Length: 365
Ligand code: MRU
Image 1: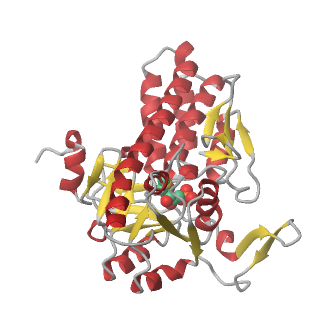
Image 2: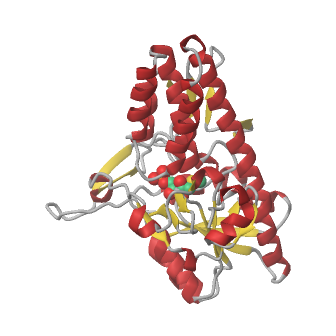
């Protein structure tokens, strides 16, 4: 995506081949800054502290983290240590483990002297594949938006939750990719952006992206979506996913489930857009089996933002002493999901639906 006329990916290797650059997402939307990752530790800290976030992007960052670790210690033990460190950073998004399994599997079969170069090449391949998948998700999803546009006057009103855009992937995004492709093709779209407490990825990151791309949008408080749907102000919901089960249950940022319930009650189509690397083929029941990250209470009790004089301030917003819970994700059961948009097309959210797009993964009966 372009920022100030220059095209950026959210992660890219430096010319010296010894480190990678990422966009520091903790500084957005007020400052666009790059951060250099030069070691396994740098990569692990960047994922844990959400300098980088979003399921596909943390997968790619983990793959580069493994490559950086190979420079320090290319032994079998070095691979295991790096994978353990990186896998422990965030538990919910399966993309992280998927990328590590893929890259580590390749490295284990290679001589130690070749592992660093191989790991960097594999991380770059995973990044390129993510861009291609997201672009393809965009093309498939844009057809849905164009169909809606053909049946109404005015813009297609899309509600999205959290940030599943360019910043959550390497480029394009998942839920936002159809919006970008449709907008670029002249389909009128207006995006309603859930603020997405507690970290406000919608208000800070999705709004930043849509502004940068010139897509009309409105930021709404998290609790406003149901009301808008009741009044016919949302034509379709599109969200991303951090892990989707083989039966089509969709895990995504906390609050997604409530939007799906409101969408179902108001007969608003509800789509999840995700690449194959987000599908956990080993799980069926997402509510029961997907590990949900519990994050620091301070994300709920405090808010950081820009002050009117251009500085930054952190303020407490919860009554001091009150206990706080902060589950970061929830699971929307497949029955509430109208369809899953992937790089291979759009399918029903079910084992059979996914099998139509990924026949190679259909389990033997
Ligand atoms: O906690 P985050 O910011 O990493 O959560 C991100 C989301 O929930 C996204 O919707 C999800 O990763 C899909 S990304 C294309």
